[in-house]
Image 1 (cartoon, one colour):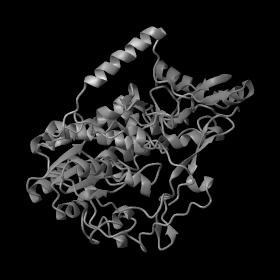
Image 2 (cartoon, helix red, strand yellow):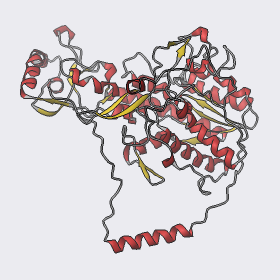
Image 3 (cartoon, rainbow, N blue to C red):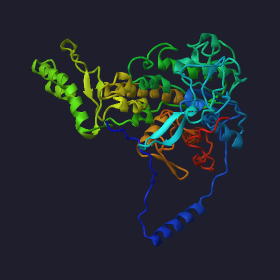
Image 4 (cartoon, helix red, strand yellow):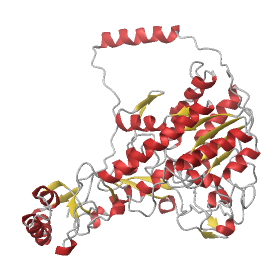
Length: 505
C-alpha cells in the first residue's frame, strides 16, 4: 500500500482584499480615522472583588497542554492570565499554582515514572511524506527527563489554582482524592496540592475564603467516554443521582458548598464544550486509505465471503436490503478508501457467523491515535474496534449529556448571580468559522489552527489566552467591570502555540 498522507501543513491565508491600490489606500485611511476616534474608557472594577481569587476545575483550569502538565503551560493557564489582569488593574492579590519542576512534564513516584503520566508532546517538523511529527519530547531531545516526583518534592500550598487534570465533577467532593496511599484511585496531581491526605478539592477552596472563584468542571464527565470511543470503559456521568453520583446534584452541591460557606463570594462558571468538535476527533478523515489495484483486489477477495453472507441474510429477511448494502465491504484502486469498523448498532448476525462490519462514513469520528496505525493495516486487514471510533449513535449520547449538563450549569449560574462562560459556543465557533483576535484567526485545526495543543484535546497557551479574554468579557457583563472597553483584554498574539523540544527548565 502507499503511505498514508492526510495531515498537510500549509501557510494559512486569512483573507483576501480584491481592491485596486488606490481603493485599498482609501480603506486604510478610513480605518485609521476610525481608530483615531476611538477613546478607551478608564478601567473600573465595577462591583467585582478580586482580592482573593481561587480557580477550581480539571485540566482546562490547570493549564494542561500537549498531553502533559508542565511549568510554562501552567504559567499561561487561563486562571493565571485572569489573575494577572486582576492584579494589574483591580484589587487582585497573588496567585499561587502547584508548579511542576520542569517543562518536560510527566510524574514520578519515588523515582519511578507513573504509568500514563509521560512527558509532553513536541513538534518535530514534517516527515518525508509531509505529515507532522508529533512525539514525546524525549524522542526529539534525549536530555528531556521527568523530575517532578509526587513522593519526594511536592510544593507547599495553599494554592489558588486547584485545577486537577483528570477530575470529573464528583471528584471535587471526594475525600482522599489526593491521598498518595490510595493510589491508583487517588489523583497524583491532587496529591501534589492537597492540604491533607483526606481533604477534598472543594474543602481546600473554601478554606481560603476567596472573594472570587472560577469553576470549570464537567468536561471529563463526557470527554472520558468520547476518548475511549464510547466503548463503555469510561461511561458518561449519569444526570440523575445523589451528590457524588449524578451530575445535577453533584454540581448543585459544589456551588452550594461554595456559596454557603464563603460569604458574598462572586465568580464565573464555565460550561461544557462540544467535545466532538476538538481536533482529537476531527483530524483523522473517514476515508484515508490509498490502494493500488493489487491491494484493493486482495482486500475485496478477503471480504467476499462476508459480503455473500449479507446477501443470504437479506434473502432470508434477517436484515433489509438497505442494511445489506450498508454493510457490504468494497475497496477500489486510488485514494479515498473508507475503513472497516465493528458497529454494535448493526443487526446481530452471529448465528450466521457474520460479524458486525461496515465501512466508515463521513458521519463517523475517529480518535487521533488511530492516525499512526492506519499504515499498519488498521481499517483494512484489521477491523476497527469501538475504541477507535465514535459512531453517530455515540455522538448523539455525548450531545444529549452535554446539553443536559449545560442546562444545569446555566441554571446554577443564574440562581447565584455568577457570570457564565459559554465554552460550548466558543468551541463551535473555533471549529466552524474560526475566531479573530489581535489580528489572528484561530481555529480548531490541529497544529495549524493556533488554538489547540498537540494532543488535540487541550488548548495551547494562545488558546488559554483566548478563553481568558472570553471570561473577562463575561465578567464585564455580570459585575460591571470594563476589561474589554478599557482595552485591557490580553493580546493573544503574544502567547505561544507550541514550545521547542529544547525548553526543559
